[in-house]
Length: 139
Length: 92
Image 1 (cartoon, rainbow over the protein chains, first blue to last red):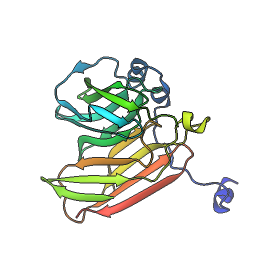
Image 2 (cartoon, each protein chain N blue to C red):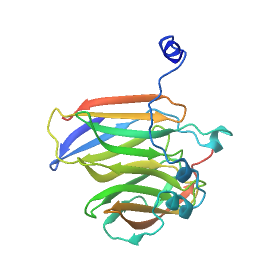
Image 3 (cartoon, helix red, strand yellow):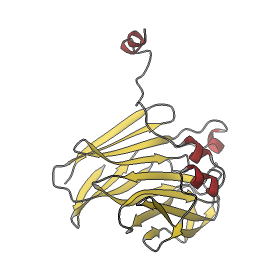
């Protein structure tokens, strides 16, 4: 029956088993988001570099570039502390990728942006404040 | 999408056409990409999970170790309505 529906075009095959941490993304505080990612304990590190404007005129598009020089970094999470749902993104870097990402994020208001890098089973953190002139979550 | 050799590594820049609407914008359910996969010659190297806080028409830059001209880079994504899309290019 299912096969017939697929063949008939009534059901669209959906990419199976793509992982998306609903609990972490639904968290309303940075602490809850990091707990849901299993990263409740973090150690400050200068090996994480966050490159972003000090003042973002437009909160709808805030460019944030992140890299980690901590050896064996396997994941990076981006937490915008004052957003309604603070966890903005997380990335797993496998063999063949460098722990680097540049993205554009929405920020509702001036906020600290906390980046957590995972390396060798430990979690490291760096924080940077970005001031926002016009918030970019609604409208 | 653009993939270029730089300093011994491969820089990948990809644009995804998607409204990325927050719950505040739709006054209901948000509509956004949730998963991103970057593959090199068919092998996954980056898996991303993203939220409605990523800007409309997302642009991402990634950096891959090494690389050679002609390597095939594929970036695919899946949104919260189950729609998928992908783009491919060869390293220049």
